Image (cartoon, rainbow over all chains, first blue to last red; front, side, top):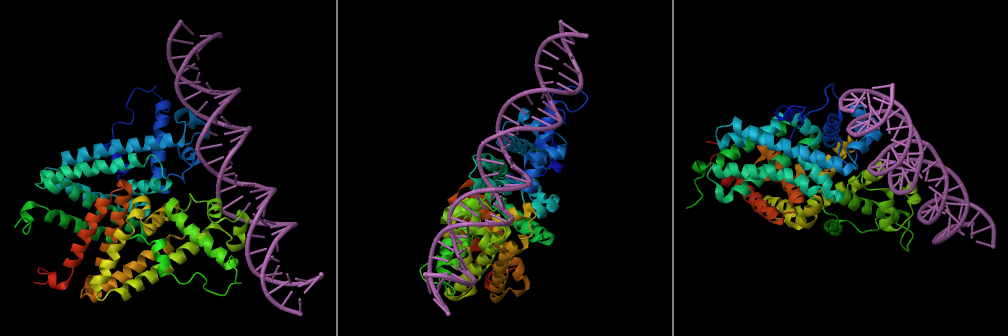
Length: 220
Length: 220
DNA sequence: GACTGATTAGGTCAATCGTCCTAATGGCAA
DNA sequence: TTGCCATTAGGACGATTGACCTAATCAGTC
């Protein structure tokens, strides 16, 4: 999986969405800086393990300033998830524009494993690890975090449907998501890049096998 | 994956390994109680999120008592991992005794997904989620936690080798581990039992396909 | 019954957590 | 300049953390 931050910055809209004073660091900008830093720190260090002080030190503001922009830590988490949702939407849209066929699109998804392999080996998948942590904390935001999975799930299912596999599109989508999650987890545990590349190749082979024309033994 | 605690208690040796006073609650027993409670709480709530007070409250001892048995929290973590390692060894040995063929053994591994599905949907896989957390914390115990993965990895590779797939045994073992991890992660995120059962069936199909006799297009 | 060593309870410690308050800052409008 | 409003810095708060110390308790031995 691995929605990336850096990569997605390219996809993301201009850094000044709506009017903001002029000489940087207006309120909206600081808020965005907080979300940006929290996004990265939540990914690299975990949600609970990341303290306000860590975020403040990263962007160089005082701890007390947080309360003006966010009342609680959960509000920051919500903002981070909302940003990831938005960037995931844009990433999926970009993949869909860039590729000509559903097959291309599926390969773009798998390509994340290679593109983000360095971060994956260190921190796993941002979506998977956040969901896992929130599940253990019994946190109400788990549903929202899992919603990012759903974006991929539904988009992948659409791609499989466009490929002529409408009847089991969701099953195939979940299978692909499952593989990306398993790869990310083991890659992080073993810090094994060769494993990522090997399973990346296996995923692409599996995708090819899902082409209706390649399915020989399906309906007798 | 999911090394279970309750299930493994059956496999585990007697609760009084070496001589201990007589009327319960001698020192060694308290230590074991701490490890037992920590194992469960680390799994259900995460390592960092679990406080000494939580463990103490679970087994009904005072907080100050910890220092006699463990100097630091990391020592408790080490003891928990060591216990999981030992129980994993015994679980693998039990599987090997129970099954007649390597195929049976591989199916025992996959069966964990069904046996532990309830806990997996709530907390994911104990090994995978602990490794993910320790990776983010940059904790030195990550290697030891990943060592539990290695136990499964090497045992599975042996099974594949016994099945006549010696040349790619480790690759197959990692693929099987990868699937179990992906299934656990998504099952926890979506709380979806049907997904577990579907992918469990797919894993068993995949295992069958790895039988050399079933491989038709391998060496031309 | 006194002694001994293992075990435990209770409390203290500084550090850190998220939260919250208040005064200072700075740009803009009148 | 004056005042206004958004923004920020800095600190204080109560709670909780892991770590640590000490006195009480216990069983078994002499």
